[in-house]
Image (cartoon, rainbow, N blue to C red; front, side):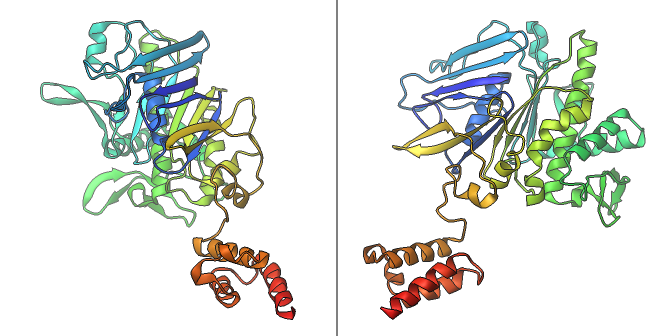
Amino acid sequence: MLEQLILSGVGPARQLGPVAFMPRMNLITGDNGLGKSFILDVAWWALTRTWARGVPASPQPTAKTSAIQFRYSKATGVHEERIVFSHADGVWPLKAARPPIPGVVIYAGVDGSFSAWDPARNYWTDKEAAAVRPRAFNFTPDQVWHGLPAETSQINKPIWHCRGLVHDWVLWQRGNDPAFDDLVKVLDALSPSGMEKLVPGSPVQVGEDVTEQPSLRMPYGQDVPLVHASAGMRRIAALAYLLVWTWREHLRASERTRRKPAREVIFLIDEIECHLHPQWQRRIVPALLKVMHALTGKQVPVQLLVATHSPLVLASVEPSFDESKDGVFQLQLRDGQAVIEQESWAKQGDVVNWLVSSAFGLQQARSVEAEEAIEAAEAWMRGDKDQLPGHLNTQARIHKALEQSLAGHDDFWPRWIVAARSRERT
């Protein structure tokens, strides 16, 4: 499991960290552009020695030294490295020594891309084998669905690392393959609720294309082609497929190479709530903690590194949050530099309280207009005329703004009405 990350002269700050990750849940919050995705990219590189999208992190132009320091642990011990960027070669040089294996690592990008690192297929000690085998499996959004070809071929015949969701789902289903049973289990585990289970329907054809497509059986009884399902359903289906494909191919490769299967799984997920309905947002993290048990029937240790903007995601982990295993980290701007700090854990109780907590920092869990009107009303009730904006500098204007932005049953109305009437009497 990844334990620590320190970035110097690279990324959004002169130094970012140390970030002391927890062994189970790590939820990373913060405004756009402060480096949440960048931290996940570097975490992936530290664990796999590859860049998920093929683009290495760039050193800061003015930094004398740019370095990435990391530490991760597994059952056999702790591994720690500090890699300094080589300006002469333009690379992050890797040590020749064989590093420990952190486990199976899966990275879900916000754009629908996926990356998978399998110690049985991507980790080779022989230089000749390492030269021809992939260092990781990096899928574009289209390749998740239609297959990941190898860079080599045999007599003009393509070699496939993965045939893709469309091909494998239908093949598994038609052939009664045990992999399809695994897919059903994972889809069930990742479903939003007991009333909205993700259940495969029968393969269907779309339009004039005779290629059979996977489908989902909707609550209203119709089998809808997966390509026509909602964006949220497609994202969960892709995650379920990649998890089943990665784990089954890992077990197969472990048996073929006489290795023991990995005992840890690390999920890195960027904006986990992307495309998901609130019902799903408040279930997805707890589901990911349990999905490996659903897949294997065993308690496989899982570490999550999740970037999120969703207060529902944070509210969803309150019942299971354990301060010895889990952490919430906030990225914020301070003196022109991004900083990341672990937040003191405190249950907020509901989404509104999470919105106005330090994790998200809103003054009001309302529209911008409602917040502005309430702040003007508060200043007016205090008699602080200097704090009133020009367009809300009278009682009448403030009252009109409140009427336009607040619901009739809003909790703020009694305070305002009492104060306004009291002012009128005096």
